[in-house]
Image 1 (spheres, rainbow, N blue to C red):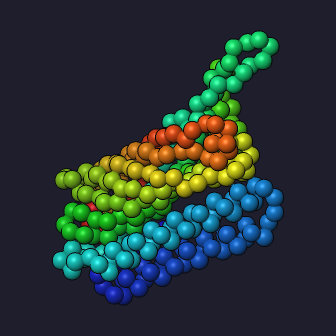
Image 2 (image 1 turned 60 degrees about the vertical axis):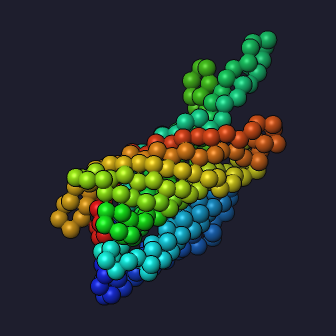
Image 3 (image 1 turned 120 degrees about the vertical axis):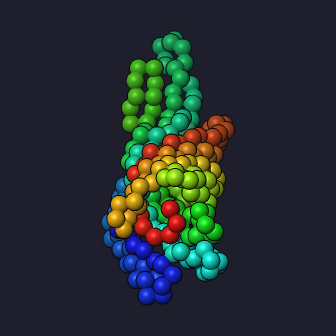
Length: 258
């Protein structure tokens, strides 16, 4: 769902009601999951709560930015929904003894390429520049790549939230950059037996926009770099490292400077 909140108070009220309705629907989903049991439900519950918190944070940043925006630049709040695919570099590289006198075999763990959805709120700061807060979720699998092939180990959700700046570079192009956090959510087994933390994240990206009636369609590529580690890995003597993600997305939105 895409809504517009312009400088007009009536339209702003409509936009806020739409955001509140979306948040209420997400909270209802969390309540429904909490009535179920089992480890899978617990994993989904954690994922749902984390995504709702990310979305709430993005909305709060957007509203605060709107309140502080200079009147000359107050062209309205831009709300956008993006969807696409995310690919990740290796999260963990290790060696495992193969047994039977055979040499150790290298094993790489990574998040498999998977669908990603992102919701963002943008607030104009000055012409061509806007403050942007976004929250995203990736529906992935933890994949083990060994010498004889690859196999999916467990379901893996990846939630991230970013606050940054978007700049209309000229023509139909734009660039964005920001900082935030990322968390991997999975059932408590394997490398996630001890859970996972929110890790720092930095992202840069860019793309192209095209107006379609009242809406704006954009195609963008985002690159993310973040730290990675879990208590289970650290207990086993495996030091945390860094990982990279690439997100190719198509978005549709309206309102604010594009």
